[in-house]
Image 1 (tube, rainbow, N blue to C red):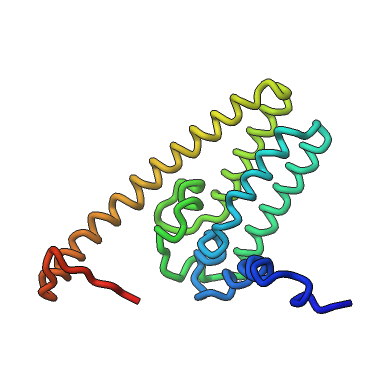
Image 2: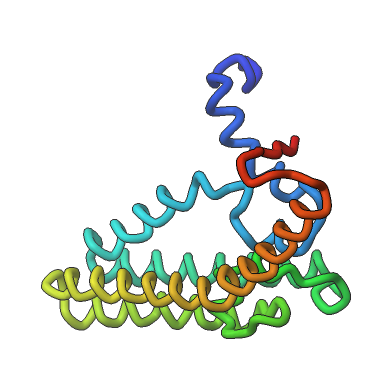
Length: 190
């Protein structure tokens, strides 16, 4: 048997290594929960997650939903066990956990229980609607998820982006004035 590194292209090995990099990154709580280092997988995961309810029969749908729910609870438990007291004691960086904060409706701390419960409620709602209406409800599910995503984006923008922009704008203006940087000049940070 040949070693793994010789059988897979470098790009494939890099993609496979990214989740490990996320766990080893800089040790902040949000590295364990937010997909910053694995965001390239979000689109694929969404497509797979959308394809299963769309193309599956009842038995596969129930099994897949149960597996997804179990994996979600297992991963949430792993975060809580691994992070331990850091969940209460460590600095909470709101812009590092927008999705989890939205799901938990808690903008002041990481609430894994509420965020996990909310994610499972969304999953259950999609499965129940799909289960009760067959394939004819797929457009309604798609529209509902799109509206839910738009609501999440607007809410996250209002709670995180807008307040952060106001603080950053004041800080950036002060920095520029104090350092003597003119309007037409650019500053590059490495």
